[in-house]
Image (tube, rainbow, N blue to C red; front, top):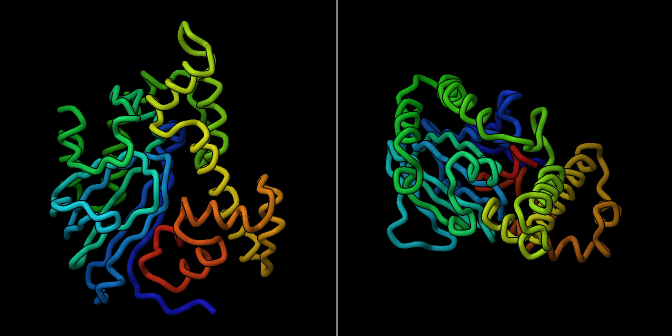
Length: 287
């Protein structure tokens, strides 16, 4: 049975269609005006192939798992996070309001020239990573009156820049699957540049996306499995053994091991925690 969760705001917003191959989605989070226990002010996230920019509109936060001394985001801060190799958690000492844009890593590489292998597991002020033009639009986003206006301001600025660099990037509509993105990335890496050896393709993938191709495929397969498990749960039946086999795992135990490593818990536990534990709100809105 679903637990009664506090009336916080946690929602996922899709990008406009021309940006669907650049932005995976936006996460809006607000705990303003809601009394929460310390454990409910934790925010748990999986390992991810995506980069993010987070606007700290109100409140503050810090990275707590894995612990990084001094990694504190203050009100008015804009935080850049690179792709992550393991599950992680942040915590807010008080009420908070944030907006996070999730980027396909290769899209942000194309827009900024950042070597994503260097940005793997990075979490720092966006001013330390992005250029002056980004600094200006990030300030405009913070100054906007509401989240819809913030997203509109950012997308109005981003769309012409993405159109100029996108090339043959995957994505023609909202919510393109991670599996589709990884397949397209592998193909582009194999066909780009003068050197077309497997080693050169892998180097390109690492520079564009941070993770090696094998890890990207693992992350995409876990996502596919969790989405399938969610759909079966909502339909009133969950056969994780069937989900595992359809997703290419050898058995249910194989799927559970992979999920624990990359997501932090087994698929069955993730479904339960998303419904009963406030700190798992990112899983609740995504899966």
